[in-house]
Image 1 (cartoon, rainbow, N blue to C red):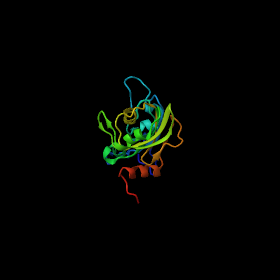
Image 2: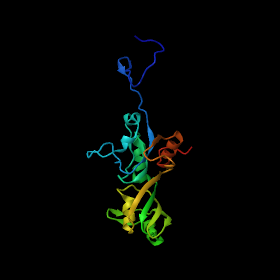
Image 3: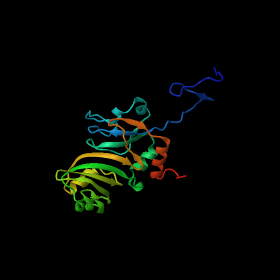
Image 4: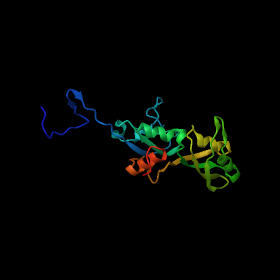
Length: 211
């Protein structure tokens, strides 16, 4: 019996109008995760390794979120998770050239000549990499710290780029995607993005107007 003023729980109740089921709009969920080393960027893993969904709360998993792009198992840092397919597509498609920033601790002393090779666009085994923005933050005989910004998302790209100039990556952390920064989010923690952060992300990949 219809009762005026009755409350409806979208998660439990089925509502019909003239015999047709009312479909509730899906809730769009977009957040950021500080991926730790050792986790696979996947929604499941046949080998039984820890996956990034293990780090998310139940309600986020039930909303159907998935990782935007990939970080290899050893790489740490900023990973966007969402159930917004349009946003995920734009953020990962090379056409939209969304910048990703990494801190890379590499073996040996990186000199400007080697860094210039990355800045000019180095040749990898699967083709030339586009020019990167590279800053040498620290360098000594044993180790260097690089800030590397790229607009591509090829498999293990930063590791391969550094290896190509003779410096093995010892630790790699992604600190920024487009306008979104990792900040002080603890390793293994996650949070929802604010409306303003989502707006800026959408602008960065051409999904929203700047006004």
